[in-house]
Image (cartoon, rainbow, N blue to C red):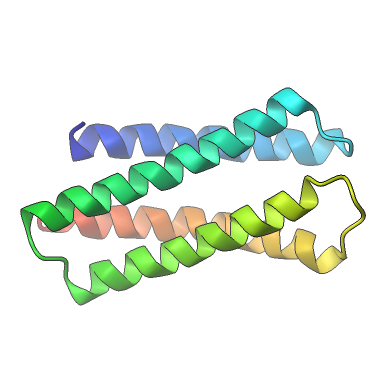
Length: 124
């Protein structure tokens, strides 16, 4: 898969993640199994596409420090999203801080991914 195609697919994944997340938040608990599964799988797909893009770039040329830091920061935001989202989807009452963490890390991971992909395309 070319990096450009990967970026387009990742962008579409993020749009679908965002829309399914809004749908989930509006539907309330218990979350619908289908929409929750789609949301989780799209999130995983976006993370995998980002990792593939980083790997492809690394194979072509050495990553700069900024690209490497961008990848690490994005990965940390994704981990925060995955953990907080997983806790929220358990059906058990969670502290409001978990919801706020998910609400904060979600847009930060999207922004961080966009910046990281932009950086990766810079010297391609």
